[in-house]
Image (tube, rainbow, N blue to C red):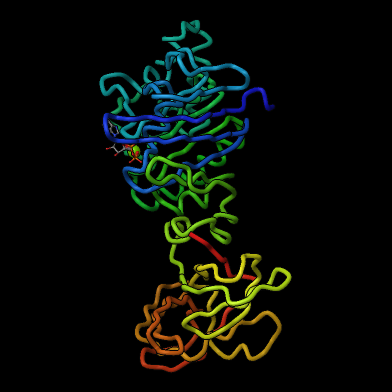
Length: 357
Ligand code: ADP
Ligand code: MG
């Protein structure tokens, strides 16, 4: 159903000298779960608020389907926003909170009570209608805010860090439930977070924002495994970044000079280009890779620190031909590696990401 696609075209928002959002082009397909991810102050709330109609863009256009909604009031748009602080009415019952948007839209009493019931049921709060807001836990309040949003059956649901105030266990549970709810409603969700794990576990697509610009956009696996730039590589979890320069180039394979010596990587960049080669901590292995096809030997490494983290051991090592480089490795919890050990390390060519920024 491309007719309800959300599309932002060259959206900018300035506050005096401050550029909050710059030149954002973004398309969210109908039924997609998009996560807008970025550090604090990167422009997430401002961008979401322009989608919802609470902030006016300095320039640019916003469309849903073919309709230009840039100048449309929030209540007239087919969008609903779930705010960071939930914005529930503390003196109203759960059902009056959930029915609020419907009252504003002049939905009949009967239809309203049907939709309130149905929405409470969908968020797992069946039978909570008569309760007061103050009688609810943080997680339950979050569900009420969600029920209120879905009750009006928006084309696009906008959520600003909706799980930020919840403790870790409830947050994980709500992440799963939100995805489940989104799939069952088939409503477009734009979900803001600064948490990369949350983004990866929930998104169909991630739009990564930094200094008001979308710097990377795609499915979580692509964003994590093949980041387009150094910001993505470092923001999406730990990464090892090796400075290198291209010494020669032949048919899509480049020979690079690096602090680990000379090795080949798949890459089409011309001779002389300065690059960063990225491997994730779990992509650098210990032991000898020898001369197996596609293996890059990174030489000897001295283990400086090992931290047991349940699912893996995180190790810091010093390495490189001058022993002046540092890498982070994630190895199996059963790997008996200890601080002080000397180990051989290697990685696979196919895991290497070559970046030019
Ligand atoms: P995020 O939600 O990613 O933390 P925001 O969208 O809230 O980021 O803010 C982006 C930038 O715009 C920040 O530098 C912030 O200080 C600025 N900003 C946001 N709202 C206003 C405002 N009403 N007046 C002035 N500056 C603002
Ligand atoms: Mg914000």
